[in-house]
Length: 302
Image 1: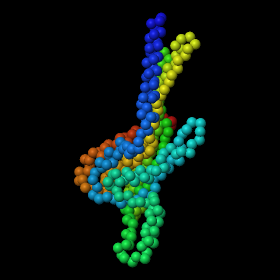
Image 2: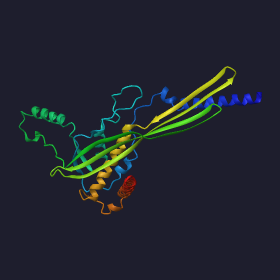
Image 3: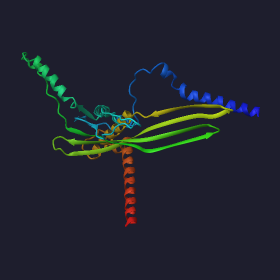
Image 4: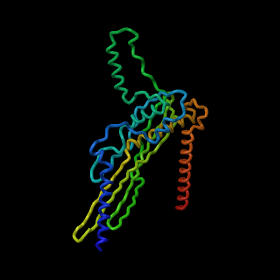
């Protein structure tokens, strides 16, 4: 009996050490010495964006706004929240993606009023100077107008977890998946025709790991300890990934539909084009399968 108690005590000590390691060791440096500011890390879609086929020439584009159209707020249990579920700076993210693609030359339109005000100040300063060298050149115009926005944020599209306990010692994990959707379309400014429209989605993963010990070590003596870690994928990075994917798709759709051209004559064999066509084919197959299932369901009801 004494030997068995010693084994139990040894197990409890090991459990305590493991819990302390899980909850403190990983974050010790961040707590004692906060991390310095750093550049925003790139997403998985960024590699496809910067490796698109080479364009014949850059296309001037204008973006007046690419905003949150979901109207959703962050979910917080028991309290009201006025924080939106997604970033309100999607226009800046889109402009960065357009520049990184090397296909477009974005023109400043979101802050156009500020730009025009500065130009008025310059004209007023140079008003008394009649030298033609001091004339302000006109603003450049765009050939393409980009419109769209963040059109969806679906919460809890998938949830789950797993856990186990033995003799009061246990561990469990939970996860939740949300999804953000963006739509982007290209419009010919001269005719008003919508040239291409694309959409992209990105999952937002949240995960929690929890471990604990709950056991009577002796009569009237209860030992209890617990710890856990929660990780949430940054929503702004997920929005960035979805926007970068949409820009890549827009470029490839424009090439395939002859709206703009590439300097690579064998663009059909380009890795990014083949990857896009494969994803598009898989999506179409899934859509056809869902249509057939709906038709069968309607037949059963009839």
